[in-house]
Length: 458
Image (cartoon, rainbow, N blue to C red; front, side, top):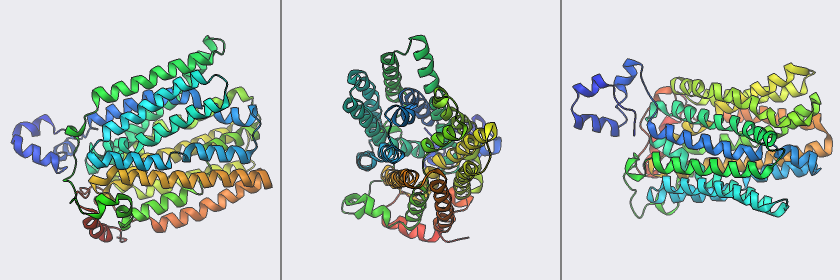
């Protein structure tokens, strides 16, 4: 399950020693010398699952902003609330999914349940017809499934990787995930063109892709026997009784969570950026669903290189630089730039933002999380970020409605600038060497003592 040693090294070392080194995360020395460090098989399998699942998801969600604002006539305030709620509704189920996965080491089972629920939601869209309530319920089921599966899946990635390849592993996974995000809208467009706008066909094909993702997970992702799990914590320990409270007592993790939430509260969301682009450039609304493809293409190209860079120099700087790129996108929308330069510039900066923050944040948090609470910690981190973005989306929508586009965007620029300065002070300064250390495998109390030392500036 872990990075395999090269053939030359494997032939010269005793099998027992190789096994011990693999468990300690030290089996990659030979690979590093030969330049053939590879991503673990389970990470690639999880990437394939995410790829086909994202094809399924993006087939039906690419046109939601256009549908809500231009078809239903919702105000920016209403759209901001719905957009934030759509992404923040999974807050509770993320925590439940992370806790359930850690409780018995059932990361694969819990993740599989989330993927299956999202696949079934496509049938819900098919059965709902044009009923708003039915469509809302199907979309809610999809978000619940996503919330349940995300933290266990990311925990599986981290448990399948050695500490010095976390950035690369998350980068590869996010690149494969983004490939699905690119193919989904194209598949939907092709189906609608071939079937004369038969949306039922889109829902059926979307369900088939979702089901395929579940089958790949079952067939190719190892279960509990394949995970590099920690020794169980003592039955009476605080970490078992209250895992979330225990993780909040870890200073370095608390700083990462605070920085992610602070930056999330100043992130207005890419759907708003696409709407702003459409308003500024005044292009035909039929081209609107293709906007996410531009930023997704940049994300796809940069996810792996940025992950490798984060493994080498530390994950703090790329994470902050990604938000600086997003700030550049806001400023570009305020500037007098127009035409193709504005379109390419905003989509490029948005793609850089995602490439430098999404997987990098999980890699940044991994070294400060005990292995036995990996999924719970990632769920808590994702929940904090989602709730903060809910506030940001609703706030920007209200500012747009009350004051207009430019004042609202100016407030967003100021908020993100302040958030960047605050996050730079909050994030623990863990150097590249510290990122390569084996994550804590003991109780939360022991992790507290370790992170108190590693979070101090070097």
